[in-house]
Length: 115
Length: 116
Image 1 (cartoon, rainbow over the protein chains, first blue to last red):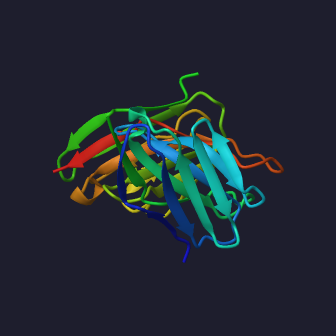
Image 2: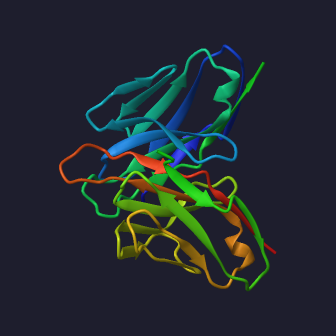
């Protein structure tokens, strides 16, 4: 069964600290993995997209890693800011060519950054 | 570019009422999607469209209908609202072209629907 599992479910950190969010998936065949940021009351916004051949990709203070062999990904946030408080969603695409454009969504990790 | 816009932002329906959630994109994307997001759950695909005049069911289509008469618009219709349809609904769009890299999917701001 195609699934995307994220951990932890929620996380509280102090402003300026770093954190790492985890994503494990069983989606197969695998095409690409995305991390989205969803602010409260807003739609998800893409942070990174990685194909199976990419190990790491950065977007400012966000760095995503991918191990396609173990089917694991992580999102590392450096020097957190209050504006990083949001839900971070891991999304996996099973194949590039499908006309469905099917994406499998994790439940998200709710990150809260305290001053 | 306004991107993906959705109306209304909020709506309360009584059981058995009907309504249409509107979605418009101005990016000339061929693919459009409707998702629902229940509290603490991942987004689930309701319906999608690969172009004007073409729609298909996603993971949770029961109780909903869609149409795609233009590239820009993809309305979602609820005919007989039920409490189980209380959720946040997101419309999204993307441009898929054979032979190109992973496509980006853009989401609207969402419609929060309560059925009582």
